[in-house]
Length: 221
Image 1 (cartoon, rainbow, N blue to C red):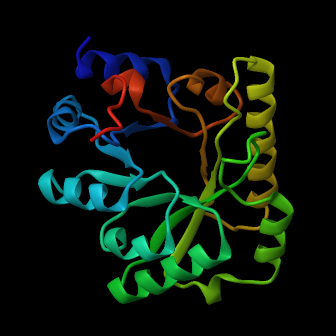
Image 2 (cartoon, one colour):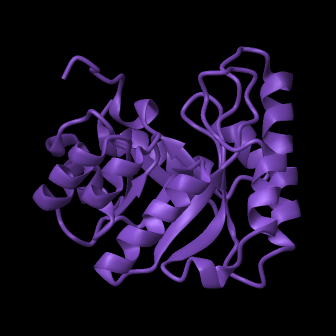
């Protein structure tokens, strides 16, 4: 199936108000161009250097999202142009994004990644630690950051009820944090190729779909 065909299938499955991030990590510029020509404008990458190279090679009306684990020493590569950083999982990373945003004269939108999966390899804040961080800081501390919402990844399992519980937990975290913000806290990023319909059912406002659109990834490149 073509990229355009698969993209259309995902779009038709999403209700109004749910945004689609086409996860293009490891896929070549040519495939991204196919999706772009079919009308897609939001793409997600997980490697800062690869993201910067694609930003330079493709039209600049694309909204680039950083969805993978982000090391503090790599923020500088994407700070000048990234639209949304999904994977903000520590106070140190928040501080670094603030510093790099100030250097660029930009306010950078971020999502707070919360750990809900029963896998130690997954990243994200422990919710209690995140609440303590938010209690001890204010918007004035980070003028070059705008917290837009929450991101998370469900446990990698075939047990649909387990995945549902993870998504429901993320939704509860999102609703709880939303009370802290007057406005602009509107994004719950959860759901990928294997589970995005369930994520939408549980309240996701943004899904990250890659292999269903572009095919399986070649991680050897």
